[in-house]
Length: 305
Ligand SMILES: Nc1ncnc2c1ncn2[C@@H]1O[C@H](COP(=O)(O)OP(=O)(O)OP(=O)(O)O)[C@@H](O)[C@H]1O
Image 1 (cartoon, rainbow, N blue to C red):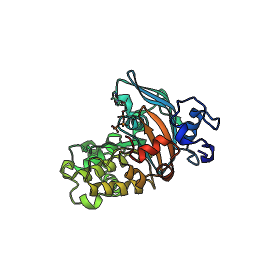
Image 2 (tube, protein in one colour; image 1 turned 60 degrees about the horizontal axis):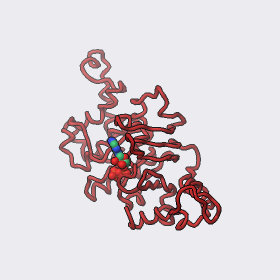
Image 3 (tube, rainbow, N blue to C red; image 1 turned 90 degrees about the vertical axis):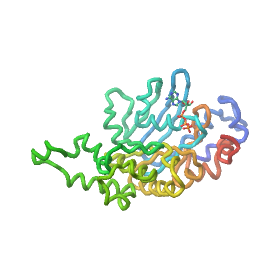
Image 4 (spheres, helix red, strand yellow; image 1 turned 135 degrees about the vertical axis):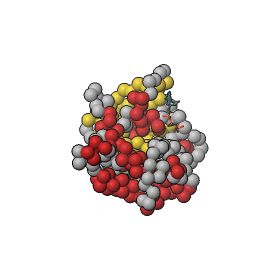
């Protein structure tokens, strides 16, 4: 966005009905577009255009367009029910699993529309991984949690047949397990008990294990839906530090209810408000210090939401 484009008085224009003309002569719709048309500087890794999502008759997301820059943290904030999780799930087609969900618009990843017929969803979800609110490790060993995906996708050969054929890739698996656990900042805590059941770990450790599991399939984008909301403050702080580190190598898109968290860890922030609108999207500092929209300012300062 060119900030100088937003010449209207936000406090009056934002509360006017969409389509009416403001004092500066711009239509409100045009002004809102300017508030969300954030210039990511270069080719975005993901580009969402005119996205609408319906659950039956419920119009959950309305005409969302936004670009996501690579190797950075994009935070999605907004009050409960405004569509943050719905939006996140659109980025790797997890909404396909919800029968009532209908999606219109395009979501380009690496220049390709992921909603075009013939998209390989397994491949898409390997490249655009997801971490959920509640840690959900498999009831298996720590090692198996990490190795499960790569074994399933045939990237690592293990088991009796592989051994009989002389193709057992234990060393490759060892490397992958260690690298993934190190990247998720949990290796030092679990390296002496990789055979133990993952359900014996603390909540914070389980969540970092789930992040390691997502990293093991070598994604480019990590989608995180309130990854720390079920954790205590110390575990939360470890996840926040980890997210910042991960953004050196990966693109992270994170939904959070916690505005301080968004302000601490993200590079850019998208504010969704009730009704499924994206109201403002900009550098995190700008959103928190000097938002264009009065409604965003009210939300951030706790006047509603
Ligand atoms: N599986 C579903 N079936 C039907 N409606 C749904 C479904 N998931 C979400 N919705 C509806 O879509 C809207 C947006 O929900 P969503 O969970 O995306 O919002 P959110 O901003 O992530 O909320 P929260 O912060 O409470 O998690 C809500 O009205 C919700 O009731």
